[in-house]
Length: 102
Image (cartoon, rainbow, N blue to C red):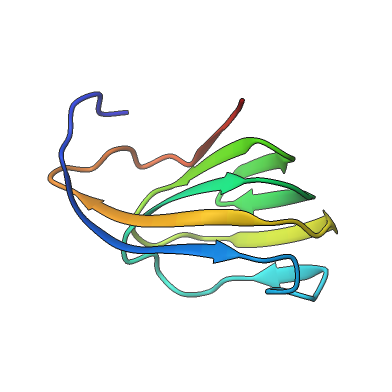
């Protein structure tokens, strides 16, 4: 992971509510046009991103890198809320997704 970078733009900041994705499983198929930083306020889910399997729960921060991916599936055990920040940087932050629980 690159330790020094500059955020060049914030494209969107959105709140995803409990009812935003009512289905249990969501499969994303589009390329990520920007990096994504997602903070989960509530809920429980398992996220499959490329070769990673992430256990997402309350107070989990998730990073997804800009670009193409092989697999991106969110399987919800308990619906919750999160805030998503879509942003670009002057150089790649990381080509690997990761999570951090706070």
